[in-house]
Image 1 (cartoon, one colour):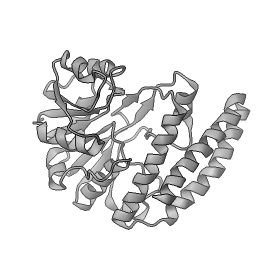
Image 2 (cartoon, rainbow, N blue to C red):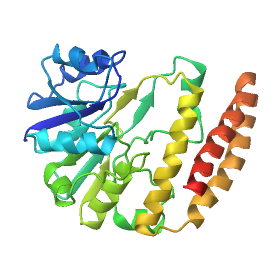
Image 3 (spheres, rainbow, N blue to C red):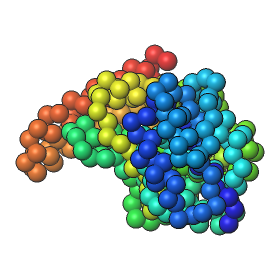
Length: 292
């Protein structure tokens, strides 16, 4: 199989980038290059340079912009994306490349596991308001009908810290839309891929680990930005609003049931904290979604 390029946008990741680079430089797949697209002011680029990887200083902020810079700098046939606050398994690239043997596959994605070392990160791993997908034990294909007909249904698309693309597929659709600045930019790319005739393969064995979240404020800000991104996606593709709000109302009842289950498991603190966090994050998301 061909060369794989690992593209990592970074922004002030000096405290976490070593863990990622240690795993990227020990990959079982040997034909790789690692490209760091850095917007930091905390010395992340200096740390990355010590690992012998390619470091490119970004001229402006923005995930989509950084990823497009990475695409232009990359030489690989397969373009793998993760983030500076993550780390990956030793066979991460190998498993990704194996899934591209089917020539119709334009994108491969997998699960993101949150490091459960504090109360907030445990919440993120258990919450019904799922930030990162955790897929079951089998592979499956995502088609355009599943997304367009049920844009906010049960099918979860991969997220930006664990996704890979066939280079030709990304180039055919013009890369990432840099007008997306709050979230859902990866979903925009995947919808374009599906509309262009490519398929998306979900492989639960392609796993990335995300460092623990420690700030509720940052988490609320993140969900607020996701709301903006969701609204932009709906406008761009004229997706129906009804399923989105239906999922919101369903979430209220799921949150109550979730709290009931934690009570039965004698986890009394979570009985109160989980619903409060669900409400805060839900309000942040839908407030942004409504006013944007």
